[in-house]
Image (cartoon, rainbow, N blue to C red; front, side, top):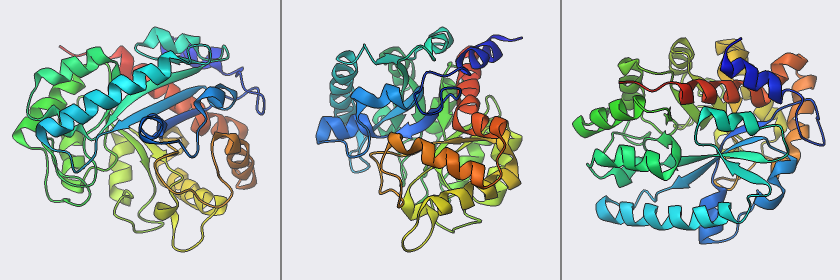
Length: 325
């Protein structure tokens, strides 16, 4: 049995009060930035350990910030975010390497620090290693528009820039995740064609179910899965459908994705504190509603275990174990 499988098996017993046998992992939330700038709406970090075992927390760099301004904003946000996490070591711990994942299931939430929008790289390749040393372990290449890396969903014909190609190749040599959420279609395929590591898509929904520009088309979802990647279904109501949407709409996208690319390629990336939520979901305390809805849609217990937690844990462990030359 490999190390990644051992971690998953160890965590299967769970540490949570509602479904004590189930691990829960969330591939994207914006709570840290919201806490720095205002008050988080959805996630109470002090109580997160009661609901989630592994949490990706993003530091989003404003799309309006360019060059040195983007770098200055990222520095300020990171410093404040680290202070927030340091005050909560009784309930949270930082995940920097694979061995840290072995602490999951012992009552605290493991936190993976993610960058959302790599505009702060600002053409400087040395920042790849510097950001790694700062503790970032997942990198969302763009937000909706183009930056120094390439094009977001508002610039779908813009692929990797020359700098972006070098930056992504450098990231792929590190034990980190490269996140294609928000990436434009050309950039998406450019990164897949590099073929050096399975790609991550932390938060989005299915274009084939609802044609929003932030949702992945069927061909993209199949390509992601074929590359060994992981698709994080989000709770953003604007990506789920028109009008008033609820948990049933989340399930519609989940069933669609499972039928298209299989359970093994799926996880959740809630986007808590970064979006408006569907009716019936207010925060991590509502995970049981999602799990109960999955039962109602015919997902088997081992499939629920995989999508709600094990797939993302295993994927993260594999990414952290891989460091290229």
